[in-house]
Image (cartoon, rainbow, N blue to C red; front, top):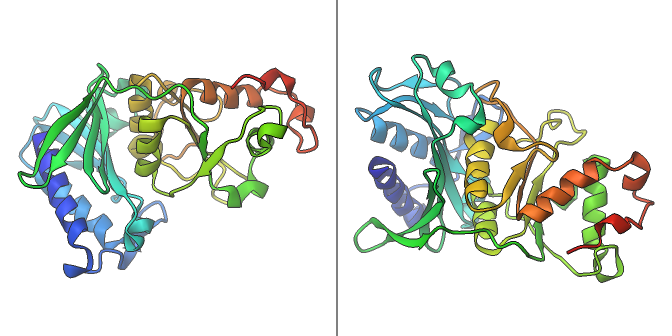
Length: 316
């Protein structure tokens, strides 16, 4: 954790300097999943891998690399990391972050990472925003540390953090509405209908396109985030990776009293089949996530865009 924090503090300084140092948003290639890489993606990956060299991390798996790397054959832990989440926002000065997940190490990388997501022993993220914060859980609740700019140390500023149970906010990329499965369209239709709809209240939509920023807002204010699979080519399982993004965020959410599913089933009940496997992702306040699951259990006729009286769902 000390090595991770030191690397995170370095990256926070690089981001704060922005174009004074170099063009961090410069396109430098495509990763193994077909996503475009920015200069900061590569810089962050190199910083973290260098930071863990000679540590107790045996295997290092990065979203930016096709295969896992063995750093120390005698190490006890295996680290999966998204070194720079939300890189599409680098050039517009919106919060980005780092997401990490820690597993017990097996002899081989595949033994360490291709396993039940519930085997996680620690997970968290660093958000590089107006304040740089580390949000982490070791399986006994969630802690928040804030980076002190004068000392480059992370100071404990929140302990046993809980996701608020109620909120009027939801996050989804509404431009993809026409591609969503019927249960997701029906759920969003009911939110957008506001006080005149079956929910009988108004809601606000948020969308940052930075998973860390979305997760941090929900950690602080509650609400729900949805990235469903859809009918576009390559989007049947959404675009978020189970190992590097969804499992660690799900671990944090459950430790903070919230929930995380693929729309129907809990993320932490899934087994990771591949280093870069993707999954639909829904997380946030427990009641809201359970409601999305209930929409998936409805008959098709009741999730039609023409069906507007879902009386079963009148609770807030």
